[in-house]
Amino acid sequence: MPWIRRNRIRRNRLKRNPIGGTATEFGRGRLLVRTSIGILLFLAVLLVSVAAPEKHLAIFSTAANYSLPIVQRQAQDYVGLLELLDPLGTVSAKSDPPRWRLHYNNILGEFVIGNSHARVQGRDADLSGKFLMENGRGLVPLAALNSLLPRFLGGPATLHEESNRLFIGNIATHFTASVSPSDPSHLVFHFTAPVNPSVASEPGNLRLTFRREPLTAPASPMLTFNSKSIPSADYSENNGAAEINVTTNIPLLATFSTDGRTITLAPAKTQPAVTAPASATPPSSPTPTAAPSSPIAAQSPPPATPPSPVPASSVPRRYFAIIDASHGGGDRGEALSNTLAEKDVTVAFARRLRQELESRGITTLVLRDSDANLSLDDRAYFANTTRAAVYIALHAASNGHGVRLYTSLLPYGGEDDRGPFRSWTTAQSSSIPLSQATAASVSTELRKLQVTVRTLTAPLRPLNNITTAAIAVEVAPPASDISILTAPDYQQLIAGAVANGIVAIRAQLGAAP
Image 1 (cartoon, helix red, strand yellow):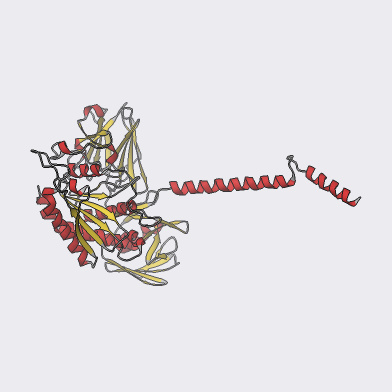
Image 2 (cartoon, rainbow, N blue to C red):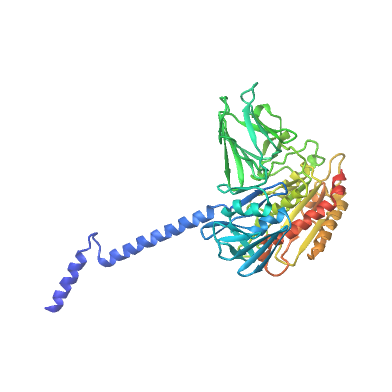
């Protein structure tokens, strides 16, 4: 019968599946495999994107050392040209789409959106990629800087594209390394300019990381020494930093000469050391160390983490200003938006303020230059033991507009000082007049730029625990758009005003005991 034949044909088709299942089951299996592969590919891309560090271009010049974010567009690395030139001279830009004109000192550059060529002083310049505009910012390919910048600057500009480091002028710092003739267990580095790298040690290796110094490679990146304990070292560059990795089979400690031009690595047992909290040393910041005669040492709370040895001579200079980016690590601070945390804004402001202060001749240390956890006591401990002239805490807020400046409001009935020691809870008491003068100076500079500013007192920690002039700067957007907090021009505006305020009162701060 016809219906019997149709059923036989259907059964025969089901039996033809080569892997033993029905055709329907086989289809479901293939769908499951494809779905699993898709999920795995998505997770792999997600992991790569999460793990990839943010790229920065480190710029070294006689005028200032600073860094800029690198963005990827059209499979190329791009940077903002105005932001790059701004610390180096007088710069302005005018957007008249599709054209963008930039004046640097007396030099005119003309760019057209989508064009791979520009004109500087009437001469053609190859950009190695298309010129882009984003939110009024002119973006140029990173690869174009070697040929483009000399047209504006009138001098050499050398880009190390593989490591995102840009050298403007003859700014490079060179070095030599050799073992001590009298003791092969000592390795001595000599530099042509003062340096202050961060130092990290692990079994078999000691690493010196130079983030703010224009260190360049020796003739050979691999150095070998006639020493059984320190056989070799190698030089490398990556993401705006230079590193010297020393291979060793003994624990080493680094000591610095007073002029910052010599670093000696020697067996740890031969070095005198003082203690400092290991948790409060940001990987990319110089390591602050304790001063043996700190006036509040006996009454300051002990650090929450175990101390690690740090050579007392590892601080080659006295920092005039300490910048403290609030929050960090697991402490995200205020959720400024769904994607923006206060801790990220404060560390960006800290780096920019350091650039502004350093360019004005103010030696500056950033306590948190990475996503590190620092307790309030750790922050005060380092601020006090480095003996800086001024401490600046940075905060960010989504409410209000402009800037709020805070000085300490001491608790009523706090502990009294005892002999040569100061109470931890009221350590700021003798410095309050100078802190208020500092806030007033910064406020004046902000008002000159038409920035809304309020000066307040509050029982903020760690301000109460600081023994020198101390202020907190809380930055809010000028309008309702919270994303302006991350805009380079707004950060530059605020950081420049704060730096000018510190410079204006520098003599008074430096004369304080």
